[in-house]
Length: 184
Image (tube, rainbow, N blue to C red):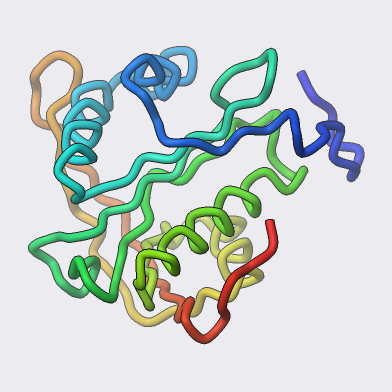
């Protein structure tokens, strides 16, 4: 387990940000912590094939996948993702032992740069109202609160049962065109 000494113990060449491949799906369950999302992850993976989504992972050499960030490029909710100007970030996680070393910032900036190259201008996301650390992280990275969400959504779990999640959230957004390319 890594200890956060305030210094990044990993050289940049040990971290690889890349598209998720099918063989990574099990790693997204984080030692059974997120097993309930197994079917959801597979569905999102299939939506990457038709260009509606992107699944990024961070791999640490010798360890494996330590982080993830998903992007919805188009949605029926155009206030989240319209396929042209606005994309939606979600399922952004870094495993706890690797937080505080800049891995999340690298992944976020990498995905923002990718969206900028794809000619998107706005990025939206929702952050739980009870997750003040994540909210501060996004604010440090240029995101601003633009509204509120009830945060009710559902998914089919690994047993085939519908699960309903209620997570009141802040809607946050960032104009990446105004900021431009961010150094990783």
